[in-house]
Image (tube, rainbow, N blue to C red; front, side, top):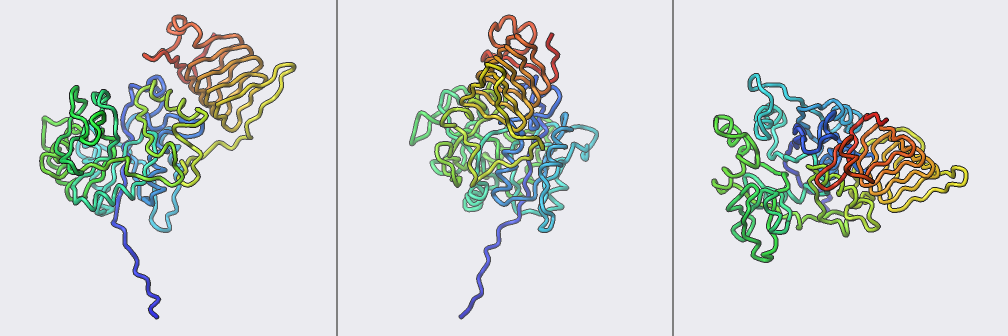
Length: 414
């Protein structure tokens, strides 16, 4: 009997996570940190979601391209994403190094172009390019299999969105199959899908390139003085015209353990979208489930004690529909429909509702925090009110178009 088992060799890949964006629409959360380093869901950073998807899928040669205010991002990755080097696995940050001349990254395509040496060193068959600031789960193995089967030069991961939201995305039209016939950035009018005219395919900002096609298009784009050197704005339309672009419909992806949140995806590019992504977590039946042990979101937490809820004299704690991180102490206060990050304190008769409190925020006795995001190390004085009188809040803090009050990191409230 022949006990020899034929092994199936997977193609060589390099994964690139684009983490160099300025994130100005997320200000003031990005005043002192890169967008991918913004905390999310209590103990995570935004970049943990992209990295977890790649690592869970078995793709463990990952470079993270950074540029703006990247110190906290660099520290987080160096502490958290330590891969075993025995089999050549790594996650490493690569800052802008001006390898192609005295200039920073001019766009996402230029970021790849300036780091072509990384691709040459790894010599992959395929290059996976993911954004660093979306909340979702995807199995990249299924995405790559689709790319290889299609014979595409580039595959674009796409979600289905209502036609009326097409002006917020790069919209993809096909030949009826997966081949892309048209790609338009934020069109005001667009034709719906043949099988569902109420929906269109929108780019998720995640791509897989065949290595040779990527090198050729990057060289061509670099020589074009009229280009903005952007993947979605410049590379993809050219590859569509060349017949090299295919789409991967995200609704075909299957994640172990996912049920109601099987195809959840949010671009947290604005403060309002960041806020509502958190509200999705604390719903009784969460739209995005952080508790899926079959496809975990990896991170590293602070070494502090568990959360604690205590009586403060006659004042009892009241907590519902809330995510409470390690080190939180609620002492006779009320917390509802909120996310509390590590080290938060909520004192007697204080009220926190529909809010996100980042690390080490203190809510003083009798204070009120409603529909707000409070960044790290803010002390809210006893009796102070946030989110009760929006006009008063505008005088001190940032208030978003959706009416969310944002208190910047380290703000001193007097």
